[in-house]
Length: 111
Image (tube, rainbow, N blue to C red; front, side, top):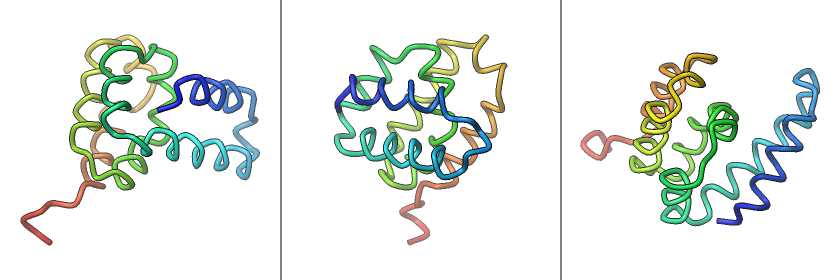
C-alpha cells in the first residue's frame, strides 16, 4: 500500500466540495484502489499507522472497500480503529459504517 499516495488522496478529498459528486467519487475510487491492492499491508496500516483523521475519512468508503476486498480482517481492523479513536467515532455514524461494511462481505455459507 502506498501510504503517501493515500494521504495525498485524503488531502484532495478534504479540499473537494461535498456537492461536487464527480470529484468526491473520484477520490473514493482512488482510495479503494490503493487500500484494496495489498490487503496485508492495508491491515498493517490500519493496525499501526492510521491516524484519527484518516480513520474518519475511511468511513466514507469502508463498505465499498469491504465489498471489493471481501476481507473480514480489514473490517475488524476498522472496528478496532473505532475503539482506538472513540471521540472521532462519535462524530459520524460509525456503527452504521460497520454494519454496511459487514453486510458487504459475502457469507461463505450462503454462496
